[in-house]
Image (cartoon, rainbow, N blue to C red; front, top):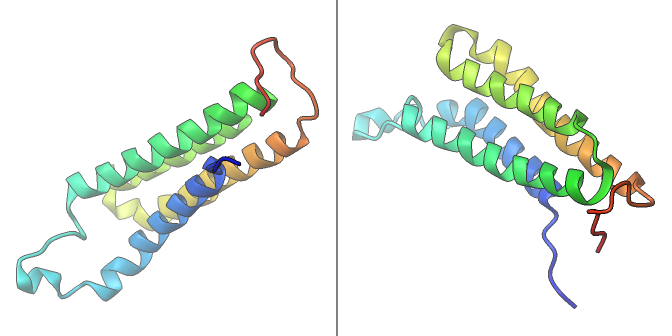
Length: 131
């Protein structure tokens, strides 16, 4: 009996962790600059987290697309969410306006993928490989 990773659950978890990081970290760690630590406005850290969320999410969505449903809707929803995160980093004055739809779209992309994978009762293409 092998161990299987639920990539959608991992993607949703990463998205929620990102939302918590963006919303709560500034509240709890506002004293870090006193000690010379600057994580809150560290562009490298922020872009790395966005890239990591994109890499995990894209893999999860590709897995569902390739093996089960062949729908682009989850990936497009997820990608628009990631683009909102990138926009949040570029236009700092729009952070809250872009963060909320970003999280909603990213989690929605994973949820749609999850539902489509569960609904797929048969393969649509010769390259499907249901486990």
